Length: 133
Image 1: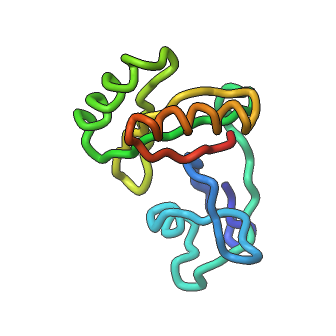
Image 2: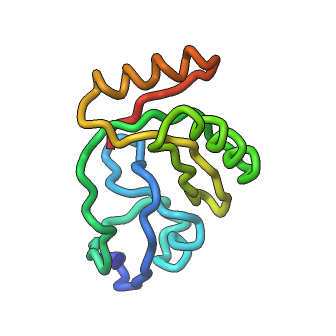
């Protein structure tokens, strides 16, 4: 990424879907903003160049049954669900320097199939959310 005003550059990893502010294309960490020299103004026009993209994933729906900061808790829930479903996995997600562990099932080809799985997990006493990727 290059600050178009001063030419300073930084390489960053994009790890979430933000920003959620009108008119912005990307929100940067404090460290990246400092490297680009945009702490004082708060915003700047930048050029974004993709250096490496994650492998393409087919779109689909996922049923998330839990999100934990403790890996052991996520693994425990994952093992419990694996007794009933073969597609359970624990995904590690890093954001803002912290690690989270999501217990998910899928990918399902459509919302209706994901909803059916969410209904099944509800019968086990577990709340879930459906995510589209």
